[in-house]
Image (tube, rainbow, N blue to C red; front, side):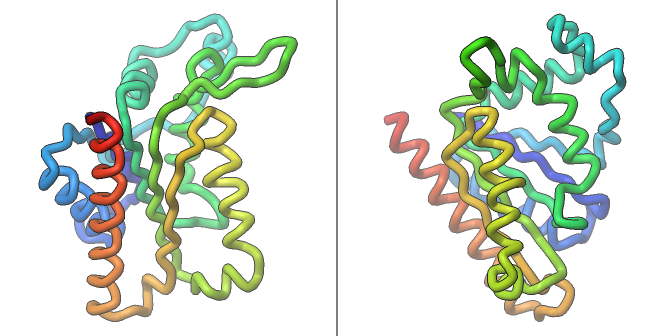
Length: 202
């Protein structure tokens, strides 16, 4: 079984997002799962899709680096996304990753009957940090809107329907004990999802 982790935070050394990444990796390592990390900032991933690349993708002309990312996604049983919520969306580098990697013919196809997602049979989990309060986002309807767009809206479209996501709020103001509790939850959730996948493959 393979686990792909996509990490998108510019502070790759001591951010809370990095602490989440470390806990996710600990869970994978304890279960001896083959795990690959794509640290988008560490890779200096170029998030800008050119017109040449965009039009070329409809002719199945895909840069080698993008084909590599597509292969990693194709091989993964569990895909984990770790990122901060910025301006109600992905960090630009993560949005650009999907702009470039989710090409026609790989992520979806369209014909006279409509559009079909091609990335199927995957489990996804998302750990999303934010400075605001999760309960407030729930009350204002923002949490549901994020679920409809960043979570199910995008990934259901390309065929990924088995998705867990967790909003981790008040990151700038909570204390160390609360942070540790959240990290424990991250590790436990990762173990649960990996266990479910392993049992399904038995």
